[in-house]
Length: 443
Length: 185
Image (cartoon, rainbow over the protein chains, first blue to last red):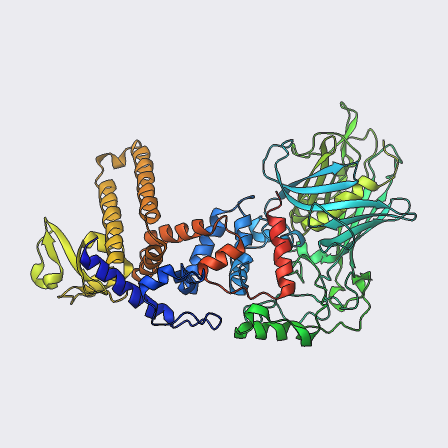
């Protein structure tokens, strides 16, 4: 190394120190401008090494994160995007801006993706594994296009519990140590005694009279929905699923009807959307009263204080009892809810069975198998022996012909689940679970 | 290409038939770069087109050791572009294999360049690429930084970037659950 280079490096070091030095860290009093570049190398404090990155301009940081998000498009690599979002408020905001919702990207990234509508183009392919011994069901994102390959990213789990008057499936965002008091509880499905009617409950309110403003850069709000601090485990009825025998009684496929309270029928129209989408998959229980917020390490930064005050100003439902509230009560949701019905299978004379085109995603015949489409008019009832009775039905608008949820068996204890906009993974999973439970006699 | 030394002044010297520009780093060192290579930088391109750079282009934001790497990158890519332009088989279909192989080689070269840098040098290069508006170099350096972040826990990333964890306790808990979910294979 020539003398000139050494001089240059030292000069660089000093020069860069003065560039960096302006960013004084209140918590690290050891850092002073008298330190030379050489001393910097031997300083034992971890924060000083590699501190050049602290000065990376936001637009360059954004460039970096955009490339990361782009390159880690599939799981398990996508976890690195989540890691970045867990670094600090600024990074989290940046990541949330860069990552597109599943509705537009077709990708699941954060847990909240599970409660956001699926893609408008194409479907998200998943599979469900059933463990009969523990009465647990696991939902995975398919990582392989081959139907029988058990390669998936874990999404949700559900535990089935039988009660005297009903059956309940409690849904969690983790796979282990799941219990009702678990902090990863995100919703449930409850059936009536006969297993013919089910209600889906979400731990968060998708529609909320206290909904202040849209999450945006200025508010930096972390929480979009507030649950009364007095009722931490409130749930909201977001959908109802019912099963009936068809006109043929037990000789034909059963009829499914889903009323989605949290999704308006207009969501399927041109320009339609699903309103009141969530910021987080978990309900926040506000057990910290305003006065005792612990400011810990971040206290000095202005924006964190700003943040805290906006957060608590959003509380306006403190006096509401909202346990098991049905959404129909809410002003904002008086629109017609979306109704889904199962597509009528056709009778295949030669095979002597009812057939639906599952496009290779379902390979084992089962009464549990179904395809849900939006109901605009009553689906024609299949009659035994009649070839293609549904041909007599009037043509549906193209948007309403799309199969929004498809579920079916591929192996013992293994089922595929494909869903799309406007359903979310959570809603789709809950609807599929109802198919396991219905006690209607099957063919 | 007729010699236009008189018009552009000392800055546009000709070396072996190629027009050169002179650049001056923040620490006063002089560097020469072919004009073709300088064109890769949108900033330099505008400065050159604007004319009047008799005594070289000063770059007060770019230190010598960084400028060295910038010039290496630009010369390499300018040569590669010239080569593919003058490829006699460019019109024929068979050149697509050559083009693919050549671009792969170039990518490898880029990776080698950024991999060989210390963290400080990488930082300086990314900032320089942004300042000089050299898209390809910015892309390569940003990718390298993104690679650095992969596989690190949020805490490790905080240490590298010297970032304070400004989440509340409740948010931290949610982060932990989110992280656990993401890493639950």
